[in-house]
Length: 385
Image 1 (cartoon, rainbow, N blue to C red):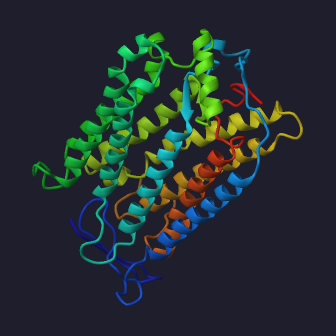
Image 2 (cartoon, rainbow, N blue to C red):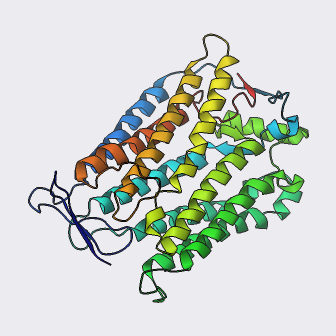
Image 3 (cartoon, rainbow, N blue to C red):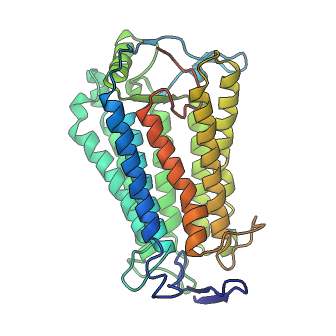
């Protein structure tokens, strides 16, 4: 399918040869690589982060970090739902930041397509699969260090299988996108996308629910050895934040709905609805911002910096989802929930679509460097001094 569109204002020539591909260069002499300056800004951000870390590493920290057993209590929700159920480590978040940065560079290169042989959008799926494989093999090679309990070691196969299931799901999507078996219809529809998305979403659901089992619950407040394990994570610097059951349900339901709907619309070429799933992603930053506001009302004077950071973090996240939706609205044929759109020009794509994501990833990295600033959803899970 091929579309050509000329706008009156900028006379931009946009040629669509397949789903999720972008325009050719407007002027090969001027716009030969529209993503170059953006790529430089990403690497500049990495240098700024590197400089901050160097300065932080030379500063002497005399504080002692301890964790006490004082989970959040609520008059509306049972204490069982409010206890931390999934501990997010710094290693995991660092992997997500690296994955997000790679995906952003790929998207920007595809959006600013510059000549034959340039990067293809299927690379985004391949990078995601590679990140999951890295996580899977890390789990495989460090299984002895995962826990001190022989009972939980015997259950190692389940969490590693969940990651493997997610890898298979992404791989099926990759096969569908590249049409490896020539199974696409004349309109470009394929069932591989939705099948792979279902497998991936099922894996994320299992990843959120398996820690509720006693044999797979490495962090709880009921057993002494688990408290020691949690303290060990905090002292080693691996502890980053904690998620409750409610947190997991909100995050999973929002992201799973987005993934399934987008896979369905792309797989069946429902072009008009491509932008609709982004509305469900907005649930996550709205939820996090509300929790941050509630936490600010219970915070003592003098400790508002983490709360302000959390609020700003979720505002930037919401902005990222909004500009992504408006960018998709500029695709010819997309109409559902589109009041306006962000044009597919180099300037608008780099500044208004990719720019907020650079801020978002940088803010996440700052949260890793400064441990008191982290996007905790239900704040004050633990008393960490």
